[in-house]
Amino acid sequence: MQHSFSGSKIVFVTFLTLMGAFGLNLTAGQFFAPLNEAYGWDLTVLSLAVSVNMITWGVFQPVMGKLIDRFGPKVVIASSAGLMGIAFILSATITQLWQFFLYYGVFTAIGFAGCGSMANSVLVSRWFMKKRVKMLTRSSMGMNIGQLILLPLTGFLIASSGFRSAFVVLGLIMLVIVVPLVVFVVKNNPKDVNQSPDGDATSFFTAAKSASLKEALQSREFWVATLGFATCGFTLYLVTMHLPNFAVDLGGGKSLGGQLLGLAALASACSMWVTGQLTRSIGKKKLLVILYIMRLLAFIWLAMSPGIWQLYVFAIVYGASSMPIIPLVTGVISDKFGKNAMGSILGFSWFIHQVFAALGVYLGGYFRSLTGDYTFVFWMGAVLLAIGVVLTTFIKDTSVPASSKTVAQY
Image (cartoon, rainbow, N blue to C red; front, side, top):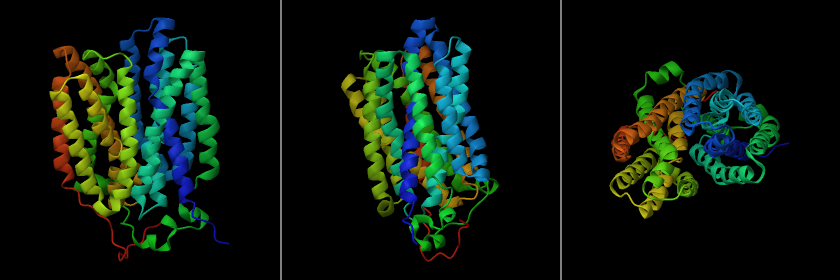
């Protein structure tokens, strides 16, 4: 008896997993005020926990990639989501500063490395060939929806029942909803249930040859895509961590930054959907160039037009050009190098992304303290994005024609 193609279930589960993973990992800032109030912990020191989280996440990306290549994405995603849930529940018990650094800065970050974008991208890439980027964009919308739902939920829980209850509820979301779905629904490969990528046997003949991590690291294509992606990391986290403070610098209220990031997340979700629809007609490379140019223009606007209303324009343009870059870069690398070492290859690319992300966060604070404003670092972001545009033009959009006879070992 022929079963319906399970790829849509995989995309749904990865969507929910990314909702939980990104939603939880980005809630830390909302706990700063109640923790400061309860224990007097300095906000600067608490912010350092975010840097520890980012660095730990980046370091563990290649590690999780290797584990995925060896054991498959299912067990890595399920155990990592479980670790995130346990780390948040443990956070409800904290009374010492080191505990927050350990539970959020380390445990949550390790879990996030194994159930975030990289891991779920590998899983979706195994199930789809012809519609890979379209399905990657649909699953990746979970990153935006997680922010839109879980960040306000966190604020409500903290206000209504305190930060300890908020930690518990968020942890249970991962343990009770996400982990069981991954365990009982996800399969590592279509062949595990006698199916083919895209539900179409001809997809076996559209795959590029699978490469090793060593071969990828020796490829110009890998470094062109990855270094372009690094400029995305620098500017993405520069905005995420410093836009709220920049809004206050310009005379906005303390809630304005959250509103702007929410608007950016909504614009990103809409752009993610549109990007997925346009990939086959325009191509991944052209879409990437367009998105990098949009973000470049947004940063120039931000550096030249410091006013409250300009921030809303920035949030929309920046948001539309933010998260959609992730599935497109994933698609480019997957098309080029196949699936056999995809976890290791994407993990290394994400590691470079996170190094630049941490640099963006650090330099944003450093130059703000040194010069009194963010102008210089915003121009620095614009220059990096211009380099990203140039690098991306050298990518070969390797959409393999259906006539290819290279067989992927799925």
